[in-house]
Length: 111
Ligand SMILES: [Zn+2]
Picture (cartoon, protein in one colour):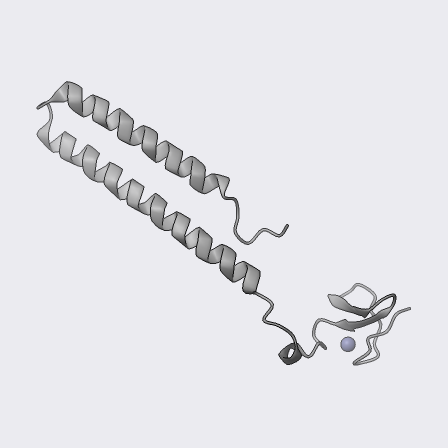
């Protein structure tokens, strides 16, 4: 049975551990000297920033679409045919924005 090189207790899979040196030298996650490691969340931070930018773009499209539809509703039935065309186009843009955002996936998923 492998043992933790820090605390000597077994690395039996009951808690997370890291392989330090193949084939069998490892340490528990809780025993690891994290201060000697690179910051472990750089990839997550980069993906979160990308998700925040995508969310900002989606929010702007949502607000613009809502503003356009509300304005047309207040003026209804003035320019009714134009309002229907513009509303359909705005909703199509919003659907595409949602599809792009949702296509980006979960920024915290691994892989
Ligand atoms: Zn340990």
